[in-house]
Image 1 (tube, rainbow, N blue to C red):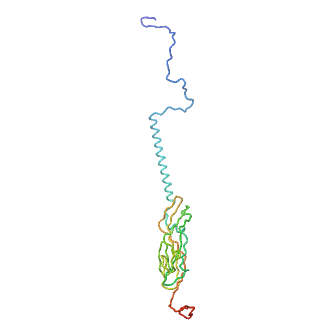
Image 2 (cartoon, helix red, strand yellow; image 1 turned 180 degrees about the horizontal axis):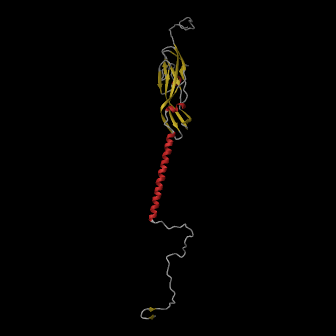
Image 3 (cartoon, rainbow, N blue to C red; image 1 turned 120 degrees about the vertical axis):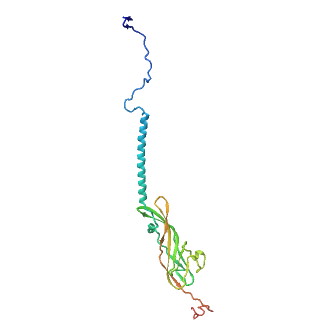
Length: 239
C-alpha cells in the first residue's frame, strides 16, 4: 500500500479460489429450438381473447338461429294445411246395397237393407310428399228411392245373422207404401287420418263415398180366406 498524501494505492493478490455461487436456472434446461413455446398470456391478454371468442360465439349463434328459422319456415311452407277435400281422391269406392229378400219386397212390409264397409288404408302422394291415408266408416246414408232416407252408424245386418224372420223391422229396414220399382242407394261417410312418415294425425270433417244404385221391386200382396187350396179348387180367388 502506498500513500502519497493525495491518494492511496492498494496493490496485492489473492490465491484462494472463490465460490461461483448457485444459479436459479436448472443447468439441464435448454431453450427451445423452434417457435412452439410462447410465454403465457397476461391477464389483460386473456380478457381480450375472451371478448373476441364471446363476440364470435354470439355471431355464430345468431347465424345458426337464423338458418334454423329459415329451415323451419321452409318446412312449414312445404306442406300447406290439409283439408278433408284434399283427401277426397283417396277415398274408397262406394259400397253396394242389397234389399232383402233378393231385392224384392212387399208393400206395407219392411224391406231390410244391408251394405258393407270397413277401414281402409291407401298410399299415394300429396303436395309432392308420399302419404298414407286411413279411412274409417263413421256413418251410412240410406236412400230408399221413394223420398225417404235414414242415417245410421251401422251398415245393417241380415235377418239371418240377426236370427229374425223375414219382414221383421230392423235399424236399416224400410217399408214402402206402394208397389213399384225403386232405386235405392247407400252412401258411406268416412273419417280420415294421414301419415307423412312421422305418425298419424286426424283431419277434421268427413268424406262421402257414393254407392251404386240398386233397383228394388215392391209388390202388393192380397190374401183371402178360402175353404180349399188352389189344388183342391183351382177356380177359387187368387188361384
